[in-house]
Length: 116
Image 1 (tube, rainbow, N blue to C red):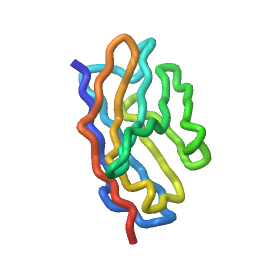
Image 2 (cartoon, helix red, strand yellow):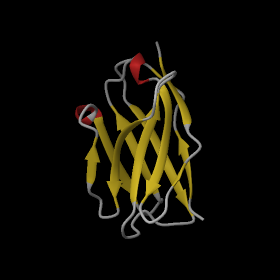
Image 3 (cartoon, rainbow, N blue to C red):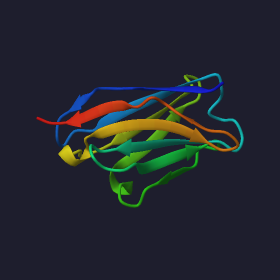
């Protein structure tokens, strides 16, 4: 069973870069037909998809966040990473990593607060 675990700082200052990693256990991030995503949920709001990195390494980002988003991967560590630059308090949210394809699952989520 594939499991995901998010990690990273819980507090980021405005204008800095938010960096989160997702460690995958029980599976490979290069397995055909799977996509590895980041999603967030701001307080009191719905889920917002941020982007994904596919099994070939291809990337696709939400148009509204594309200019500030970079998703990368380290296949040897079985991790994929989210970098969101120039953050503001509006980026405060619970951030989730997830995978999709023939099957799917989500991590438990991690709270990130943007505040000085």
